[in-house]
Image (tube, rainbow, N blue to C red):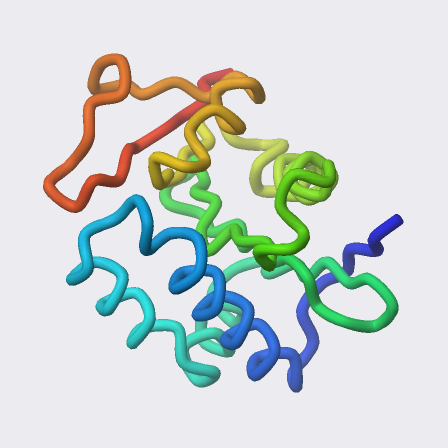
Length: 154
């Protein structure tokens, strides 16, 4: 079973590598090339450290290796967003996403929120729908970047 803990300084290199690898090996099949390149360039170790400083970043480890991550940020008084939620390609389909999202949605900011939202790639859509997320813009309506906004309202 994987362990989940809060980010600590020094995790940014491994988290950056995880994000970038998953973008190239998984998301690149579903998103426009320009979107993948923009995200890849964005997720430097420095940016990861800033995201962690601005939100509640969690890392999932197996045998000391970071295999998943996700961050909760407040976007309003009663709403939060889950960002940069990724698993390594070999960790997908093993129930780890459910374990990670149980922790992310249980974060104190999400627990207090009336709305939790995220941006989903097409490949993760079924996972989020099974968790109760819906697209407020209509069933599977995509933005110009092929990503979908998903939300849960409480």
